[in-house]
Image (cartoon, rainbow, N blue to C red):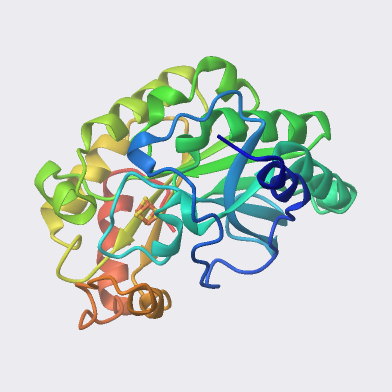
Length: 283
Ligand code: SF4
């Protein structure tokens, strides 16, 4: 049961500005575990931080909001401090929307908008739906970045206020996908098919990790699945790097990729070639 003091804390909490590479932990120690989370009407949520001036999370110049909580456990995650809700700051919807409104004129002028990322944005589907609705009413372009694992939570009503889905397809081979994420690939593929049927613009992202996701057959499976989808504007190949490694250590988590090198340019070129040969716009 929330006390009056708890409620006051949430109402006064500010959305932390920063970077996806800032470490956050234990901002909301009483938050539920991800498996037990049921969020209600989205009047409040948990967020890691927001970043201004992003040019990589959708068209134009954007604000990217990183929500907390994720049901996947990717071996290469740069933000393991977004896995648990408790690591994020508990905030009211009103605070987030007020902050967004401060930036809205500049974002419109720079032909950008809002991207909500994570963690997994669809874990907090009600909270993010209401933020996206507010962003749309400010005339902003809206995007989410998601693994698609919880794609069924993105109802048609949710998607109505969304201009772009940046969909991580982390592997094409189900066994590799499970090794990478500890979850099943199928929900992501079903979500991608639904977005394709609707004609919703999608950018697919594929993180290229030497020795983990780089097998030619694994890449070919993603390429073959995506190539016929006319709504997919881009396939973006993201070379693995070690910028988030320190977070694993700081959180006392077992980081299995400590000795994995960054993806070299010739490997990136080979994988881009595979996507292009299959008929994808890849970059
Ligand atoms: S889906 Fe994203 S936030 Fe979640 S574990 Fe994977 S890389 Fe990290």
